[in-house]
Length: 346
Image (cartoon, rainbow, N blue to C red; front, side):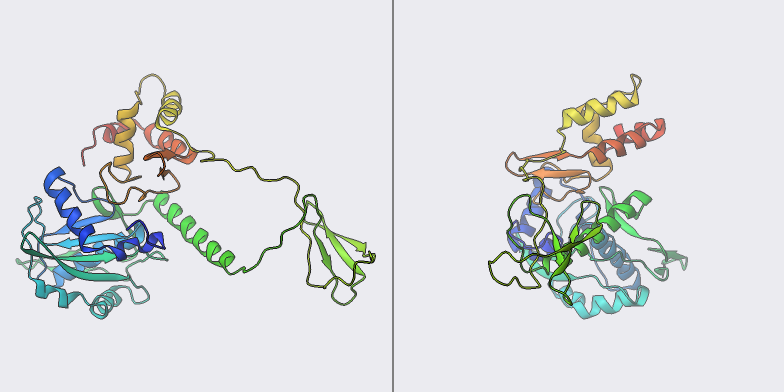
C-alpha cells in the first residue's frame, strides 16, 4: 500500500490483506465510515442501488480516492454478500451507468471479491480523479410507495467528509482546484528531461540565433538587456547553451512552515479570545469534524488534506500549516460553528 507510485492511485493497489485489515479493525475498534471508506449492506442491481452507489463513487473520487465494501450492515455487522455480485461491477458497466448522468466524466474503479472468515465481500477500490466530476442530471429513483427521490442533484459537486458524502463547500472547491492545477504543473515539469549544472553567481544569457555575437542578459526583474558576446578563446559555444543566474545556494530545511498541535492551539485560542477554550481536545474535534486527516488507527496515515495537514512519517505524527490556523480562526469565530465542532461525534 505504501509503495504505490501515485498517491491518487494507492487504493487501486489494495490487496486482500489490506481489505481484511479494514474489516478486522471494524470488528475490534469499531472503525466507521470516513473520508476514504464506505460500507454497504447489500446491492440488488436496482436503479436505486445504482444511483446510490454512483454518488458514493463520485464523492470518493472527487476527494482522495478510497474503498466501498459491500457486505457490511448499517450497524457495522459483517454479514458478507454473494460473490457473483462481482460481475455487476465490471469497468464497462460502471462507466456506462456514470455516463447516463455525467457523459463526459470517468471514475477509475477496480472491483475485487475477497473472503474474510468464510464470508465473501466485494470491494470497489476508487482512484482519486484528475478532474472534478459533476452530475449533469438528477439521480432519481422511485421508492416502494411510488414517491420519487434523488440520490444526487445535477450541478452539485459531491465530496467526502468524515460523516460521508456531502455537497462541496467553496473551501473544498478552492482546495481541489489548487490540487488539480499543481498536479498539471508537476506533469509539465516532469517533461523536462535535463537540467544544467552551473557555477554560483552565473548570469542567464540568451543568444540571438540570427546573430550569435549578440545576446540578452536577463535581469532579476525579468527584463532583457542587450549585450555583446565576446570570444574567450575557449572555442565556439553552441547557440542552445544557456547559463543561469543563481544568487543564493539553497539550504535544506526540514518541514518548513509546519506547526505542531500545541502551536496551532496557541495561535487559534489567542485569536478566538478568552471566552473560547482551544486546547488539544478541541483541536482533535476540529480535524475530525472537517476531515483534515485520517484517524489515529488507519491503514493510510498520509491520507490528509495536504493544504492543512501532512503526515510526518519519521516521527509518526502530524504537522499542520498556517492555512489550517487561518481556516480554524475563520470558522470557529462563529459561536454556533464552534459549538458544533467541539461537540462533534463521528
